[in-house]
Length: 295
Image (cartoon, rainbow, N blue to C red; front, top):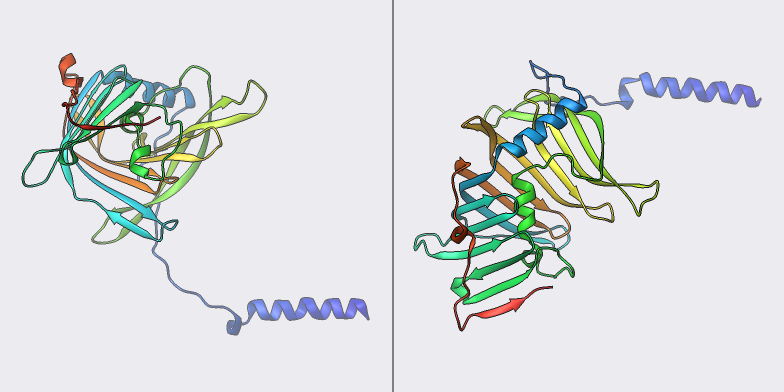
């Protein structure tokens, strides 16, 4: 009797699965594979990443920046006014971000760092912020958790650093090639993961993951992790153009998921490897300015 019931159950399941009354088919957007797919070894990819990083000694970029805060945790999103300005970068760790108010074109934010400490002026509020490049105690205000290293590490993808171990995996992504026609393609990619040993033991902690599209062999995203294995920065790269002999993205989006902070940068002009003076990375805080010291 048990065997008869089992056979009856199998027969019923087969009838349900094959009957048109118990299934529904609907159309989805096709995403054919990209026409040209390139291949590279891990050593070749590491060499290319390091080569692009080494090729830029200084950079002067004209940018438009849109910043937004909030998301599902806050239940709201606040989008701030678009600012235009400049980003100056000089290796090893000098960086300046200078943004202007729209229309009146006076300074809205002026931030400099030498890689260890930073200063930031907010002239419209007669306020300044100083602190260490290393975030010690996170603030409830996501903008106060934004350190200059976030810009530096997102603009320039570093090669393999001392103590990092490397592995490669393959995956694929679906991307939109034409926003008007809504055409999609499937592109295979390489994911170059960089790990560090945790506390000198056998456990590895993910430090970074660089996502490289195989139609161009150029990075389209980078994930940066903290010591607890959480993604603290997700940067995406689009619109690559040649600036001299250097391939560089003209649209960079920086997302900070823990802070629910997003910075969308459009680089309208990029001038690499120009001579830069020390005073271009100096910022004097005027007397009478309210100064907030961050840890």
